[in-house]
Image 1 (cartoon, rainbow, N blue to C red):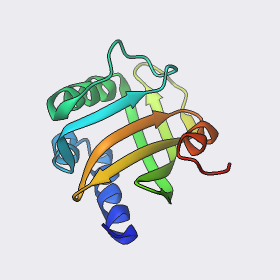
Image 2: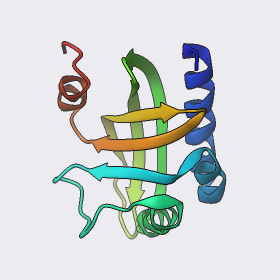
Image 3: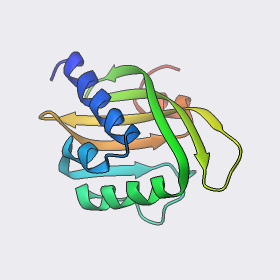
Image 4: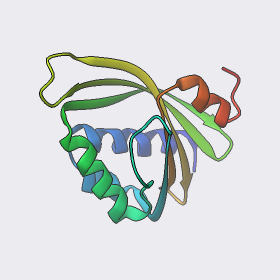
Length: 133
């Protein structure tokens, strides 16, 4: 899959999330998608497979009044793509807006997302992908 195809796939993934279309985002993922959660991200067990990942995302989005991840840049790293993400969010019941720079690391195979690692620290994501930060 070419770089432009990776970017198109990930643009579609984030666009689906930004319109609260978790099922649409899951259609872009392999049936056996694996998600790794940073220890700083609260979750008892990392979700695996479309159904668990969709359930996790629905629960996550339900805890926010607004949650909008916007990819700013994609960096190819072997069989991975690092998405540099600008997050804008507001928790339920909160009056404060959150604006954070984060990163997600994707593995893509046969036109589908097969792996996703969520990072709150961009440098840690780049280090994981073997990219000098």
